[in-house]
Picture (tube, rainbow, N blue to C red):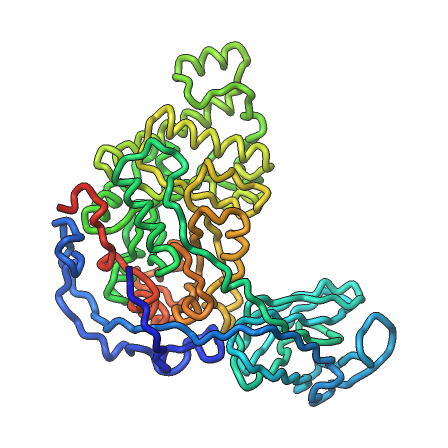
Length: 535
């Protein structure tokens, strides 16, 4: 577990909660000190003997401590017409539905804005509510103390509506709020700032008990270790293209460190293709890392609901088929007890089981995420909630009870709370978080999505299973947003066409800082005393 310091280095603090790296980079590329590095841990009692010899850059770890927080009750509404107007912005009082003496128009015109000032006595988190009206859908960037905090969206039905941005850190003596980059004409009524204690109520303590009791000791100890880390640090993680380590190699070559977790892809295996990915996971475990898998499940060569032609609802059956042998399943098929679609699914689950058994035989735990992002309706396994829940539980029961795979740590990733499988069917809850705005707020801590996941279950650790931008370490500390891990997606999200690190979404400085700071844990920092091969 990593120690957190009480002082914040000014050079890495995201000033006023800004989501963009502030100040000079911790290390510029010219400051890289090449060293001959073996990818074993720094401590002799935690790592196995297999090593990788390669020249990697070396960085000093950046200590990022706690932000000063002194929450006090606060609520202040400022009418837009009372703010400082510039350009073509004007206060008017036509129509109805507004508060105060009017509202402000003209904000979409050049060099036009309204500036509102809020006195702040206590450094803490606040919610900011913007009330405005538009005749069509309009978005606008909320700017606080000169830094963009996010984009707000208004439906545009002509009436005034309130849109809230929650858990924004503000500090004394005042906060200046403006709106910028409106996509259309917007009539601003008021801005309300209120204290919020939601961030401070998060309890990261967990019992560390797996959903399926018959687990290997390595798996039990790993999950307990993950739950101990939860709330103290964020594990670095990376999704890899199936059969490849290009992403983690590029990261190590740039940051000097490997991710704590290597996530592979099972897609090819369920179609009978030997991708060679299991071998890479075995090597990563031997080199001191943790391993995980996502299963994006192909049907007829596609994941897409609209393209696969696979009807999941036709596979659903009232028969308890999860623990039946192949011969018994064939009998049910011949009598019409199950459909060909049902048999197909079970046969492909069995193909995946063969690969996961290879890891079980080596006593390697697997962080396993099947059927990702189901509720979006994009993939065939997300055709409807009931069919998805049936399939998830079929996969869970088949792998656990029929194949006796005791090395799986299950990740639920359907995203919609109504699609939750229940605490008894998962061990980690995760969300996919993408931000293609390239806004200055895109490396925020994502505390609000974390809080929403905690509403689903407060007995499971929460993780970012996919992302294209990493949470800023200073933002993590400020918002106490300690995701279990944050995993960048594979391919073009992490590597360029030449196999180097892609910095289109995450800057090189942000990559380096994330892997070399006190808020995160990389592979060489893992304590692997839970492993049966650690001695």
